[in-house]
Image (cartoon, rainbow, N blue to C red; front, top):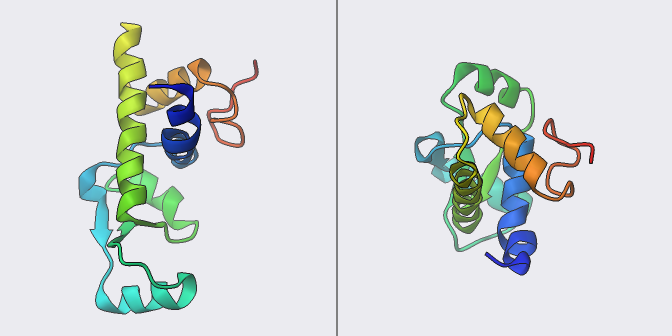
Length: 127
């Protein structure tokens, strides 16, 4: 991956993952209902893409998450998030280290990337 891809394509997704504090799985995304699509279009305008809502499976994550606003994303944003997760997993795999939690993985990757990715998140690193 070149620096352009990291900063402009995958980087924003990695920053979202750091803000979320977890790496959502495919089963945590639900396509909007007809009424939710209508509400979404009224608020954000029309899109030809599918739109998904993120509902974390883990109850603790859901409680933290539910305290904030609903998190919706288009299919292309969801795909970008998957690419961000793949980059995080690759960094962890190539490190040769054993990680016992997603938090450990995110902390490690935050320490390896420029601080612009983790700034303003729980994984911000003082360098």
